[in-house]
Length: 175
Image (tube, rainbow, N blue to C red; front, top):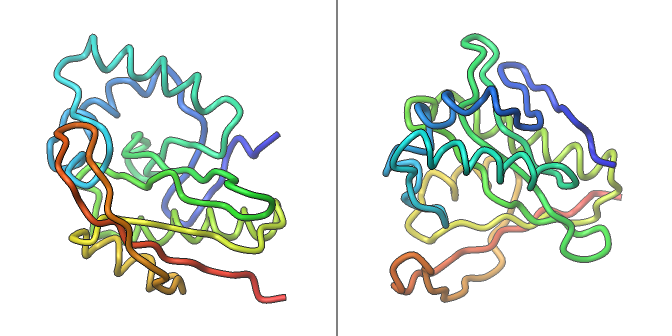
């Protein structure tokens, strides 16, 4: 139903494979800083990573959800996805990359590729992105891709029960 692969200048977004286990564990899932603004906890060992990869593969089957691969290293370095929350309105499911792969312009390539796919192929009329208020890099990314701030909402982190503020940004299709 959804594309199996989306390509950018430096990256390929495609469905996960069990062969990506070591890359994701090494590049992202085992790092505390990669999970800092996300809703997951770091993976402690390769056995946990294998279970996580199996869940990821199953989750991605019928969704706009991908692992992100760096072309030059041919490694899985992160994940990205969107979901339809109402007719023709899509929301990001998170864009995450291992810390050594940030500040290369990859976030913008990922977000713009997903935006283009949702608008051009899926007929979206609006796309919503969100991030924790203190996640300055994500705010700048969304704004650099043309998103504008709409509102904030108080949330509770299920990992530790602490409250945090999430900011929402929107991009509408020019028709």
